[in-house]
Image (cartoon, rainbow, N blue to C red; front, side, top):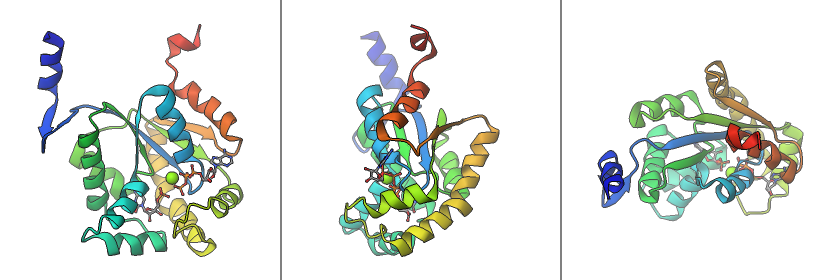
Length: 210
Ligand SMILES: Nc1ncnc2c1ncn2[C@@H]1O[C@H](COP(=O)(O)OP(=O)(O)OP(=O)(O)O)[C@@H](O)[C@H]1O
Ligand SMILES: Nc1ccn([C@@H]2O[C@H](COP(=O)(O)O)[C@@H](O)[C@H]2O)c(=O)n1
Ligand SMILES: [Mg+2]
């Protein structure tokens, strides 16, 4: 009973949902097709995190018929980054509705504006950043055979997404590298081999010693 009271007072009720006040957040970054979504599904299964993909939330917003839908659709088709306020609102709402206290935030922050705005609005610092490092050649191969009907999985948009990744997203990874928050994974291997490296990052030190 006492524990319940303490936890409730540390949380905040928003629109009928209880938002956890200080959740653990791991940013999952890497180029388009590096395997972020695939590995997040494995992490959810083994480590109890909830997976929030910024791209999936934006695609759901288009489908919902929201007033921002057309703008988001055009940005995604061009491989451009949607204004931070839109994406952050979607992420905040998803976190509030979820109620878990551990989140994998996949594909965010995508640029310095995303990063600074998220920090300013939510006051959340990531526990660490999981970075999937993969060659463009391999990412291109994976995206062209993904077959999920994504409008941005065509060679023209893929090239634009690679350019945005190099110019806008890599500086975010550099920002966190200087703060010793980046856990870099060689993502060019098989799904199983990549997950072995991921597991080592999420397994507590004391369990590794066993
Ligand atoms: N290690 C791997 N080896 C081979 N194929 C993989 C590997 N990881 C993922 N894939 C496949 O590559 C494609 C892209 O993977 P995924 O959707 O996880 O990437 P992503 O980083 O989330 O991409 P995006 O940024 O476009 O959302 C999928 O078809 C997936 O099944
Ligand atoms: N922070 C973000 C994340 C994504 N986008 C847009 O969505 C596209 C697809 O993202 P995936 O992570 O699913 O590959 C991406 O190319 C951007 O257009 C965004 O704007 N901001
Ligand atoms: Mg993805």
